[in-house]
Length: 140
Image (cartoon, rainbow, N blue to C red):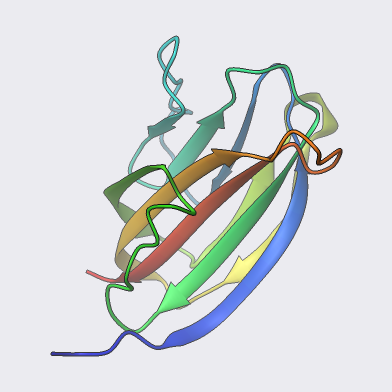
């Protein structure tokens, strides 16, 4: 059994504009994926959009690069799924709607990855951030 080692990680507070924000590779040529009503994410080949049901202002985005599939703490990430990501440049930027695109915020080798997405609201006693998002990825 291979143990997943954390290669690199970062956290960034992002603006949640009209219930959403996105993260992805700026060299992508695909259209921005749009989450369905009630969904917490939408994913394309190189872009991920996170959507909050609540009208919030800030979310904390965790980006993690692992050597292999890491274990999941389902109590910490009650909403999670796995997807495939193609990162043509290996650079991540964050799309904050009218605030614009921020980045690069994270860089990995270009290529294909498997990724786990996660979402959770902050505890009621927390003022900022109001939610947490995760993109944890490893080689496909």
